[in-house]
Length: 286
Ligand code: CO
Image 1 (cartoon, helix red, strand yellow):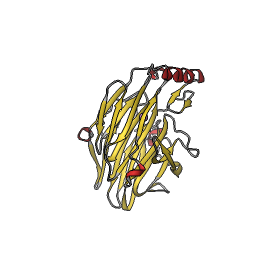
Image 2 (cartoon, protein in one colour):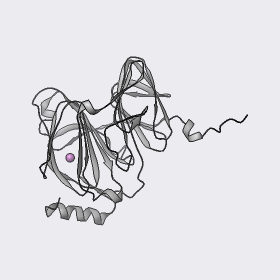
Image 3 (cartoon, rainbow, N blue to C red):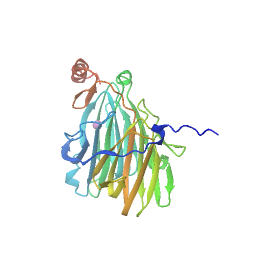
């Protein structure tokens, strides 16, 4: 009798290859945030260009919001854990993100928008992730996917463990985001008490875990609140929460392996394309 040959990649468990915390930063009109990806210690993680976590119960830390600003060449993903954010752009599109909502915005060839908190007291908490677009999609028409919380499926992974599937697939359940070329997986996991979870991720995607509450272990590595763990390649991820439980996002994407030319809110492949982006923006062509 012959045994099937194990595929080493498929058998592989992901482990933490780098861990760290975000860097305190301020963006927009003075919104205080933690820059997790896109800081000197972790400049990028192809296809992810930036990850910010914002979270404050002090309105002065967020109320000025992100007034009118442009984007070209990538996607911005805003995921609200608490609080509300109103989005308006220069083409008349407008939407209100409520707690638990996601906006997956494909800037493509260009938008000019504002992202403004719509509350003057209470907690505001969430994430903004920048996902790069391949060269062939950088000048595509802008597109919005505004996803209310009710459209995000929740999967039970183990006793006391649930996962919201925002993008990608988990146990045959697909998230609502129509996937771009990077085929992203975006999960929000809640592990209650000292519980364990096993996930399957596309084996060749770059991936990270960011803990926003509690603490957990991935193999021998401990991630506490506010820590990111960049993961090795592999299909399996095993999480062990401590007594406090753990809440985290797990995000994975197919690396583009293309040259990246960045200037503020423009992310292209070459310096010439960046120069063109600045000219187009100044000439009102966004
Ligand atoms: Co923006």
